Length: 170
Picture 1 (cartoon, one colour):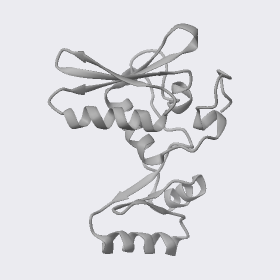
Picture 2 (cartoon, helix red, strand yellow):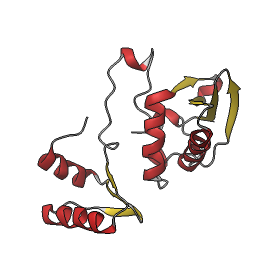
Picture 3 (cartoon, rainbow, N blue to C red):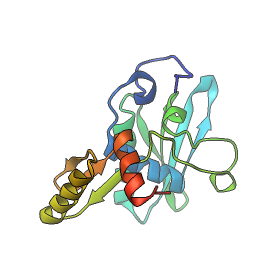
Picture 4 (spheres, rainbow, N blue to C red):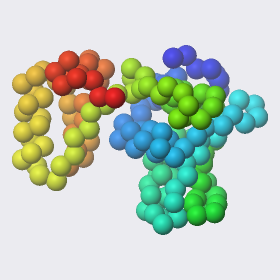
């Protein structure tokens, strides 16, 4: 995808800046669940996530992953009735969320772009993670540890190969 906005070098999709895959996967889930993107003035977009006040940890997680994905953009919080809106402005939010479009998400088809699918496997048992890694190795699927209790399959070729073995995840 070519950058629609030409400004800055903050976008991982447009400018090749490294993308924190774990933070992005979390942010994508939050966006698809309780978020939206709105076009503001000068082709700047506002990404908003709505987090129930009963879950203050979620509010902080949402702010942290938003900042991790787009570190050049500040993140703010706005109290609403029963929830907190966590939001950030960037010209590049639509680059990272191609699911953005007119109307409400539940009224239009939502699909992951080719670059978005990833497999994440999380387990507290190092032995179980090792078995998963060994199985992926036997299939020739490239994988890596994200942290001590999570591994991911994220490269396009690896995702396609795993899809061929287990079926596409949608």
